[in-house]
Length: 268
Picture (tube, rainbow, N blue to C red):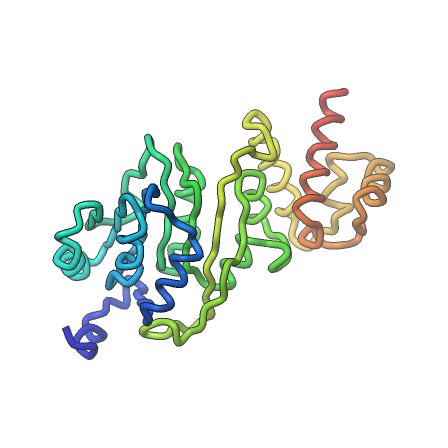
């Protein structure tokens, strides 16, 4: 298929921005540090540039593609590689593996970033690692500090996931170039969560309440949970200013605040 025909047949409604170079694809896959024992689920393989780099490195590759035309081309290209499965369908409805460890990689539609990540992190059997190309602004919201101020999204992830921006990408790395900057977002599931499962609901409620007050200071956010004396002591011990915005505190500071609240509740 010619480049002109391939571009003209792109489906804009699927937010398709394909990676350009094989060298870039190889470098991105190398960052995932895959082995020949890994099972990898690829989201939106498109023209198969990442799939082609995954195939020789992994035990099994499952590529889920929504576009029937691209899916047909991928099936033809990988028909002789039994360990590569091409699945036509919507990833958000695809049944995730539940009896085996797996990793996820993909150049995903920017407009589905939140839905895709939430589905992965909330799965009954979450992936071990997630490497997805997303809009840089979204990557910063999910990663928080030290890449950007902490957000509600980053704070709700970090007790269970290590989140980093692994790489910045250029607009010219894609065909066609997107109108926004993008980045490779890495989520690594913690083998030992920082919060027990029994306290997960309380942690989420605490963070939701504190970040749900638009324009509020840290002092106002903490008043429902601590006395004035406790807030002064915590601000001194954890080194934050009570007049600051909630996003100015680090994840470690929020985690310490939650743990202190839990201890006080147990004493009460």
